[in-house]
Amino acid sequence: MKKEFDEENEWLKVKYQKDVGVNRIGDNMTKDKLCMIDLFAGIGGIRLGFEGAGFKCVFSSEINKHCIETYKANFGEVPYGDITKLDANIVPNHEVLTAGFPCQPFSICGHQKGFDDTRGTLFYDILRVLKAKKPSAVMLENVGHLKYHNKGKTLKTILRHLAELGYKVDWQVLNAKDFGVPQNRERIFIIGSQKRFFDFDKLEKTHGRPIESILEESGNFEYLQPEEYTLIETPRRQKSGLVFVGYRNKSIRKVGVRPNTNHLSRAHKQPNRIYSAKGTHPTLTSQEPTGRFFILHNGRVRKLTITECFRLMGFPEHFKKVAPKAELYKQAGNSVAVTLIEELAREIKRQFFFNYKEISRKPTTLVVE
Image 1 (cartoon, rainbow, N blue to C red):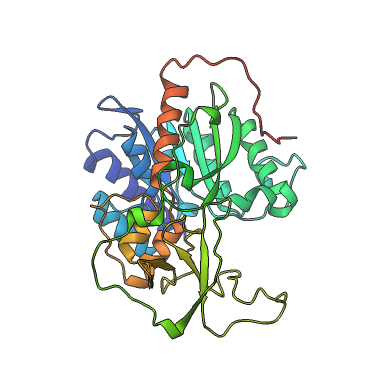
Image 2: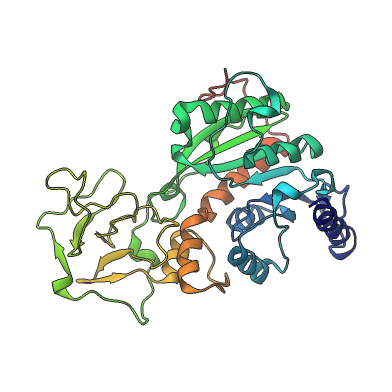
């Protein structure tokens, strides 16, 4: 195992010292651009957002083979593989570390055990890189439920460890529908800097858009036949912007289901709901390999296309989709809203790197104990 570890890290050293040219180890700025790294990169949604804000990505890491192929097709590079085998000292210097890491429980929370609190989790590998490279700022993304995970202990542990490394850390749950895409998608963003707390109130939000604004005008659409679904008589717009209009007539799970709620989707096992294209779409999930996302548009019910799913995530039209169809639906559902990330990146640049004058403030949502 040690030989395999050494060989992979030697490959990384050669890649970034010779092949990348201006992105050599030791450079924090590349052609006047701030440098960032893309850990748990997926298909590169976070990278796209940061590049849109003027950052330069100097390192990426991803282990899923299908995501790696998509990443390579779009960015012309192969991300480093298993981050647990990464020698953190070889990672190029950078100003911002970004990571959309998996949510995992910690074996010990709040007992001041240092890195031992997180050992065995992938967050531990983020800490290893932060400790070795000491970037000026860090941005982490996760599911909104993280704030409740393990009764809040998981988030508290994350915040405490970042603070122990010298970062002033704050967090907030943001919704993609407030940043230019018609999808009700809540995600938590944890942002820290060695200089100051991030002010989430400075983010520029936009008015909501309907699903119909991102739909393709023509194509080989998968329509449902009228006998395959039921439309309700009085659909109403929810606070989230969703307009539930009906459900598919499919066999459904009945165990543990409350009366008169059989048509509702639960834990991605019953994707039977149909939404109006006049409203917002619910969260795309990574557990829908068949893309069972149905909308009512122009009087007919059809499935969203791959292109429409990527548009719901804010991906540009030129983004190359090279994986099998089932993987593409999962990749869209597992990515980030690019437009939201770009706005965060612009504010990170403005607040942390360009003489931003901040009124003395305390983080509004910090829960470090």
